[in-house]
Length: 158
Image (tube, rainbow, N blue to C red; front, side, top):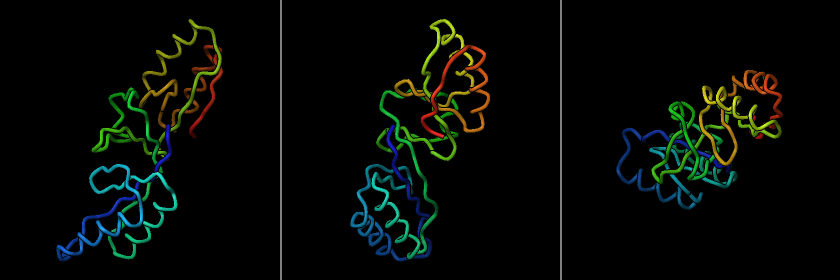
């Protein structure tokens, strides 16, 4: 799990072709773009991301700013993954931080953990290196499942 930042620009309308070239050039000067998803530039450095945001605002092409979690290549997304994140053009998995929560199972009996995991699966967005990602609104539900099975959870993303 790696925190990165997404700066989204809206496509320039009614601008000359040189304007887009200028945007691209200035984007590479201001920030090291590690990945993309359509109009979203993904940047690992928070200061660079904010500098790019300010530039896009000044050029009237700013759309949005996101804190993202970059998952590993071995992450296991579920069918609802794209409701909470996306797969980038470089085939990396990203989750929108403000929508999700992540937890690990810290302690519990093996059989109880297996049973709880079956119930957790109904609410999972993705799983990555032992971290279970869920919709933030399911935190209390997941805590209730854990209590019912005598498990101890640690939330690593809230």
